[in-house]
Length: 219
Ligand SMILES: [Mg+2]
Image (cartoon, rainbow, N blue to C red; front, side, top):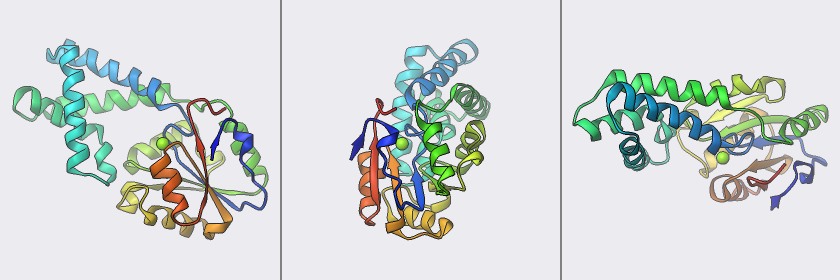
């Protein structure tokens, strides 16, 4: 069910929430764009890679990494994208480029990130009801824990479950099962909230977990 308002989520008798992070608790695209543009600028200034070239190579590198490590947290690794991007550009690895750019990307990204409208009030309401909460998210633990710190999720959320930790990405059942283990709850006691119809919604529903889908307009 797609919801237009966070208050549309029925918390009656709910003991636990499984929450996607990216594009659910905050809007990904504007934050990514700021981080990406900062990298493209430095690539042009310091490494003489024209911005349009950086943009086209990023897409090729990202698609290659997605294919190579499909279904694992590292498939979203900006470090791997950037390593591959430079290799495509010059035919060699450039460790300095990859590491510097990755740090820049996430520094800008984390700096720009904030809760989308309606999320904090909803999390507060759930917390006041004594509902336990877990983030169930695809990506590496290091960056997802940094996002946790930036949003100060400890104020509301009890556990993080990343696909790196689970060894597999949503919609695989195991990542949801790991979340239920940590929360010590059963499938009929929790609801899943996420933006992705396949990963979040179908993934949860395959385990008979009730799921709510948010979109970019949900507030
Ligand atoms: Mg998402």
